[in-house]
Length: 468
Ligand SMILES: *Cc1c(COP(=O)(O)O)cnc(C)c1O
Image (cartoon, rainbow, N blue to C red; front, top):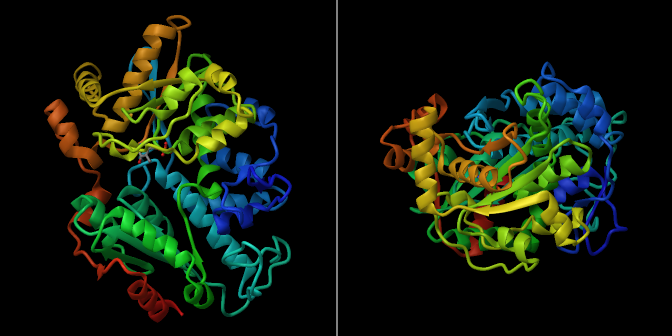
């Protein structure tokens, strides 16, 4: 599979280059330029196919010949020591739990595949130097040898991942890269503006994970990261690489769990499911729509948002009007201008009617989110986090209005563990969710971070001193 930006569809790049550069040289997002047919693969999968096996088959079908089965298998085994779990909620709804990874949210799937793939490329390419001026390629060189012709050396290539985070993305990325030999991770987070649990997840790993606590806002962190990527001294002295959510290396692996959920045929009673996706930046839904585009049997999708409903409005009106985001209980979905929207648009060739015939947009406000958490706790005996609750309520609304019959099956993606949002869940339901062991452990560890101002020179000096 090869990738290009929308403005320059003929300038195709390999998976490897899309992975290490993040954005195309013209500043656009990478889109897949081919439409592979995985229909046969999906039909051959059944309830006995394990998640790693399915991920390996899909990954090979998408990434060969650039990556062969052995390499995809190695990356998948490294990335996914955990699996999604499909659990029945009521007669019509199944939850696909995506929170069994190290940071208890679905972002672990994308971040860990990205990290494992980068590590594999770096190890395979060894210490080949990066000739200066390779267009648009930050990090290892575009024409470095592929599988079959590795040239290893004593000093493997070393890169630094730089990410700004408002909380959850940073911890998924930090955990994904933790302990990798040729990669350092630098996290910029706003001092005093992340929860204690989020801060502990960022600052207790140590080793190759460096947490920088910025005396400022999330916007300051983002601006600092942007300035660092454009800074000549840093570009010369280091190999700064980004790992943000628009990276195709985070998006592609999310297709794997859609295929996993939609092919558990006995749990679905043979029905072709509708898949409901709690959405903010719309990376998750885009991955599902890719899987459908490539042949996965799904009756359609529900785009479930909180009051930040730019996409549901587009689906009903054909007009896309981004606006400032509003704060809600499902704060990982507080996005007013979803950056993956153009990828969705591309699949439907800009035709909103086509998009609206596949995707049903639903918005759920905080009051109904709380009611949904309460109802699910009382009637189903299950605690869900506020993001998953938005999805469940949207699914009920859909079933009430658009149901094709009582045998309808909706798979709601459960994007985070309720223990990550314990205050909100307890206030809504009166029940305290258990904190998973791995989160409880990091709460007990001492925080290690470095305080930093909001001006670039201080960050530049620190990075050069530590890494060049
Ligand atoms: C990031 C996130 C979302 C939104 O996913 P997008 O891909 O940005 O649409 C939903 N739920 C949780 C818990 C998240 O962390």
